[in-house]
Image (cartoon, rainbow, N blue to C red; front, side, top):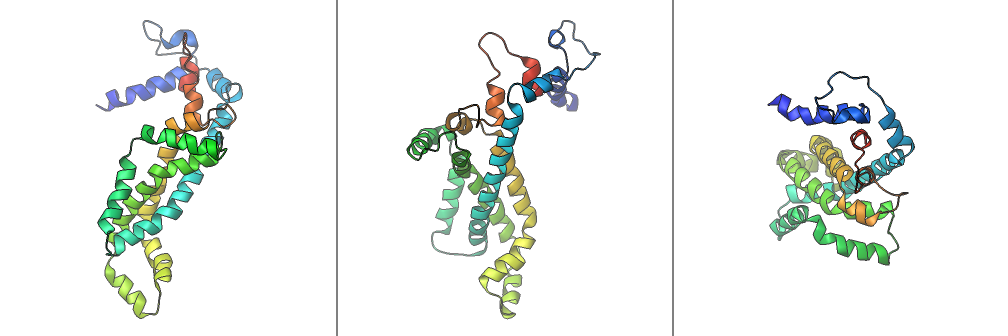
Length: 228
């Protein structure tokens, strides 16, 4: 099972360092002289280096904003009982389950009206659609698992809600926050649809969009694509 699961990864890595005439050779070429020409080509000539930087910047900004917005919301949902709590919880989860293609036309119209087409800021804001619900979902369970006795002890010592949140709850919830941040970064890095529509120019493309641009109508540069 492990061999079957890892073979596509091996093929991708092998194709990225094989000469073009050996990638689909029959019989397969198992022993070959590796070449890093594909990597040089995609990084120096096809714009992948700048695309990687764009993806990194958008992913980090998306993750940071999602943590700032989502962690307090997760804390409120996980620690307090208030009217409409279940409705708020369901609203966050339903946003996370929303299909991106439903939102792409409204997002495009908003971006065009605000002159944010080809702006990384628009991507960061659009990605909050799935990043914030993910953070809320994971951190609410994390905060909810912390014993209530800690709140009571802190209040007896004179701590207010803000101090309890920052000095006690957040440090104890770091594992859940870290998981939420990692997943937000991964999903932001991999996202294709919003990035393809909202940042179509070569100067602002993210890495997935740049890799997709390698697919031509008559020939596919598999070596370059696998290196990307």
